[in-house]
Image (cartoon, rainbow, N blue to C red; front, top):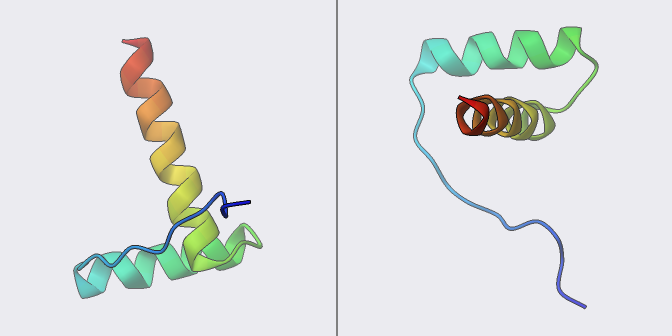
Length: 49
C-alpha cells in the first residue's frame, strides 16, 4: 500500500521558518505537522468562501 504522505521540498523565508517552528513547538507538533495543519485549514477556509 502506498504511503498517505509524500515528501516535498519548498523554500521559505528564514523569518517564516522561525515563526512556524515556535508555533509548532507551542502546539506540541512537529514543523511538518504544523505546516500540514495550516495548509489544510487554509484550503478548507478558502473552499468555504
